[in-house]
Image (cartoon, rainbow, N blue to C red; front, top):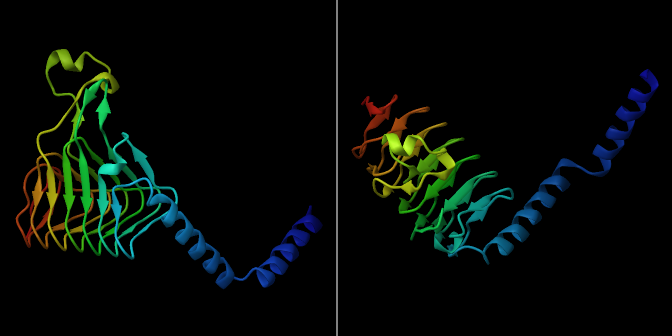
Amino acid sequence: MRYFKKIIKIFIHVVSIIYTYNMYKKYKYLQQILFNEWIKHFVGFIGDGSSLAPGIQFQGGGQRNIYIGNNTCIAKNCILGCWKEYINVIYNPRIIIGDNCCIGEYNHITSINEIIIGNGVLTGRYVYISDNNHGDCEYNTLLQQPLKRELNSKGAVHIGNNVWIGDKVSILSGVKIGDGAVIAANAVVTKDVPAYSVVGGVPAKIIK
């Protein structure tokens, strides 16, 4: 077993000499270019200089209603759900992401109504932005399985320019976030956030 481990170490060392880290970066860069050229054919619009990392998922069949501005980066394993139909109910959703945004890994953005994200927005990992939910809190609704409840929306989500959204934030339907706001990590935003304010907590409240 000891000799086998030595052989593995020698093999990996030789591979690292032949296939350098710089070569790996060039391969990943080429992969990114090819993926972006391919994915452009499935969404409404992707602006110049923008990139969508491999691993992104589209849900709901409405990816033609997704518009992404210039120089915006959407990191790996994000989900963009633009739901045109759910349980035989038709919706008219759209997701608009502005210029110079950086959407972090594992973000989940889901719409049956409208989600607009302004320019220069930065999000951390595992951010959830939704303009809808599975049903309401009426007793008859709660008797149904969540997946079989009709989707409903309390209103669009509008996020202003230069907003910073921390890790694991949830932004729920009917919310407007003003320019320059900061949303602290793990916050749950259920009400409007004034421009140039800092909010945090569950539910989110103004800190500063």
